[in-house]
Amino acid sequence: MKLKDIHVQVEESEYKPWQVYFLVVSVLTTFGLYFEIRTVSSILQLMEGALSGWGWVVILGIQGVLIGFVAELLYDQGDEYAKSASHLFGSKDRTLFFRIGVMTMISGIITKIVPPLLENSTEYLVLQTAGAVVVLGILLIHQGISDWNVRTEWPAIAAGTALFRRLNSWV
Image (cartoon, rainbow, N blue to C red; front, side, top):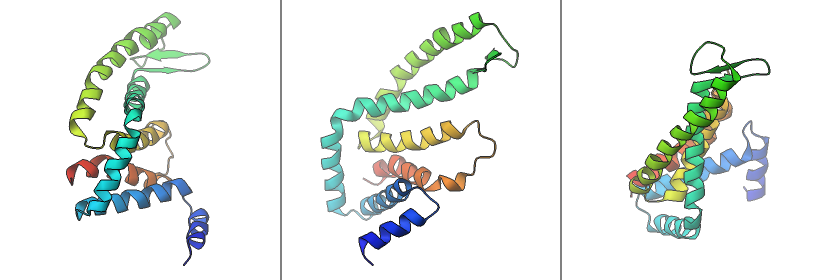
């Protein structure tokens, strides 16, 4: 089977092509590391070296996703209502306080904790953190959707999880 035929099958599947390719690369990578194939670890080290300047971007990405989860828990706002850290409707002033004051404090705490944690617990900072950003980003987007069908996103969730969790544990 030619690569073009494979690509046609991927495009005709029920999943987005980027999710399928992401899953294939993640599975091959984790198996390559598990079976200690030096070519795989060498390629990962080269990629990580080439992408090392992007470390701050993926760290900001993971921080943004984490802040997004906190924001989802703390406040809810529509055209004619605002709720902050409670089930009660509040004032615009209270919402402003939470959006700026509380979220600034939470952002500061996350900024102090997340970068050192990631830098100390990952060998491939950019690749692993990018995997985590994809998984957590998908979960954040779908957090408020009651009829979300996880089967439509499972390839990307599995791929991101494999990259984040497995790269470090098998090296």
